[in-house]
Amino acid sequence: MMQHAFVTEIEKKFDDILRRMETEGRSGAALMNHLAERYLAERCMVSGKPFPTFLKPAFMSPEQHAMVRRVTNVIMRCLEKVSNLFYEDPRYLPLFELAPGEEELARVRAPFSNKIQHARLDAFMLGDDLKFCEFNCDTPGGPGYSDIQVNLLMDTYPLKEIQEEYVLEKDTFMENVLQGLLACYRDYGWDGMGNPRILIHTLFDLDPTMNELEVLQKYFRNRGYDCIIAQPQDCAFENGGLTVAGEPVELVYRRGATAWWISHPEKYRALWDAYKAGAICMANPLNSKLAGKKSLMAVLQTDAMAEKLTDEEKDVVDRHIPWTRLVMDGKTTYGGRTVQLLDFLRENRENMVMKPIGLYGGKNVAIGRDMTDADWESVLKTAIQEKYVAQEYIPIPEIDLPVYDDAGLHFEPKKVNMNFFAFNGEYAGGMARVSDSNIINISAGGGLIPVMPASKRIS
Image 1 (tube, rainbow, N blue to C red):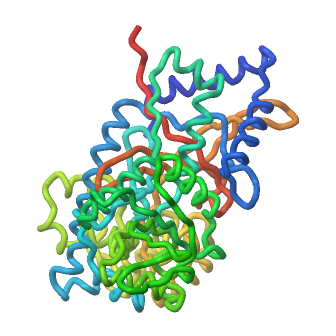
Image 2 (cartoon, rainbow, N blue to C red):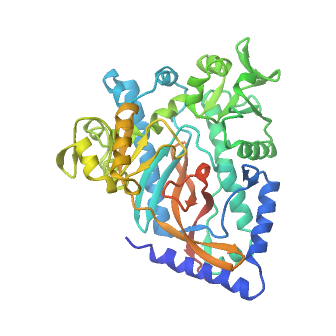
Image 3 (cartoon, rainbow, N blue to C red):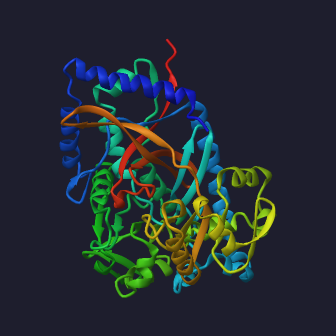
């Protein structure tokens, strides 16, 4: 499918602005160096270096923006429904493919209207074809980094010039994070007791997003909220309350994977006891992980879910979630016919991807077309033993991004993955990750650019 004509048009005009800058003596390389200095000053960095980005956003047309908003909201409703199966009937429990210890964590239910306050839905979009490849409903990262990039880029010459002809929407997320936390706090009935002290907790030696946590802390403090970043082992649960450094904490922004609670139970003991007792309001709650299991993309396509979804929800699942199955030795359906799954995966390697259901950050993702038959067979054996999903390969869109080097300005095609945020079930905007690799992930060497919905300016 071709790129949307509107996007092609605005990209061409934006690229022309970048080329004209060079002929007019406005150095794009110097501008990128200046941005890098600003990123460092704002703690927007990874591995001690400025966060990797480009001098160009990913534009969206008004029609694409409306579609993404509607589909994201519908998907969030579906994820709430599918995760509810965990509580409705024990017969549904095997659908979740829970790792040891995960069921105990998920059984504790916070009094929120939604289980998922903060989500990031990762997708590929080419023209009007939108396909989701993964749902991050555990502890999605990126809101702080994205806000800084958007604000700095909007202040550059090329973004200012393009706005003479187009209206750009600026998606920012840190305020959404804060308001989502406060909404949860109100659900606990603690509103009216003054501003809560906010704890951001994670394991420092495991979390690659530590700099972003500092960005969020600064934002919360600037908005008038006391905020501390601490490790779970620095917390104490005493006399019915949680304290950090001797001071009480009521509102907790959870970062770091749910799996860490299971692998390091001694470090999380105080937080776990406070959470079970309802002494803290924590978002995302631990049961949000139910909706982030990669196996649930397959569950959404089962007969068990069909009767629980509305016609609109079924249509969105059919159109926007690729064929996905848990890898096992047995039969399934594809395109209306019954197939032996393992044989089908062997015969259709070039059109399939396999992913472990419990990992994140692109770890151990196997793309069939990038592998030999022998390597694919090896992954298949691992997938049966360690719980993988197989998913139909989604063609990966590309975007031409400006690169400045000794030869000057040139444009290089980068693979692009759109990441759409939802807070309390509602679409809130997007960012995009870009890479030379088919596995697009910041931790694997990718970069980040803002997503900017655009429309023609009416004079």
